[in-house]
Length: 349
Image (cartoon, rainbow, N blue to C red; front, side, top):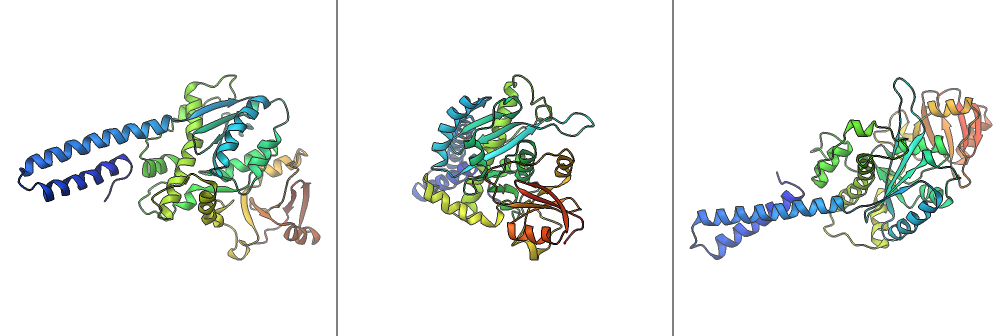
């Protein structure tokens, strides 16, 4: 067993120091060698732990409630994306007792350099900025997080925001047998040596309040920022790279390794393997059905794909050719044209 994080640094340092003392100065008492080694390793551990805490606090959090604030935040975010073509993404909403959830209230976006934009969608009064829509739809700017497909569905249903290029971090580390859980807290503990406090009182608090509490702000920013740090750490381990370069070409090459996981749910089920090359699962269709009854459609001017909703609740994303095949044979009820959506009468799988 070899520890990770700051403890790993102390472990490695203790090994090096021990070899040095035993090999170079064999005349010194072994007890003194052990004492000096342990004391030095403890000091290194404390310094490394403090460094980890500094990284954790190295965030710039901006609350976004209007278009001008978004433009100021976007100017900073765009610079980061030009180097690191991926962002952490998460959403928060209110679910009243014994009722369905409300619309997404907060959209969290984090960059690799620590910028965290908390977009308060519930307070937005003007049309959402085009730059935000393009950012979320851009396939080559990865959106990373845990259960991120669920968030992308909610954003599409609630605000017509299509989110492409989603990477569920659980897909990248599913083969790691040392992990007993694949939640954000467990991943942060394993890969970053962070103890993430997923306080239920905060996670279930009122995200639609006029002003967010500092605990809410910190909680929301961490959820998105940790996703970015995990993506970097996991990627470096999987490709067995010891040094991360800070340039776009390097991270573009890293991103290319994870194409098979783009816009894929964790542990897909209910879809024949023969269809995986043509279809990409998106989420559950119950919300789409509810929206269809109310006459709502998902609106977006840059839509490049179609949706097909199966009777068992599975939503699949496909190209226009496949969609027209089902529609042309009258196999489902037409619903919406942006994106083109069909609710099937019978399951094709």
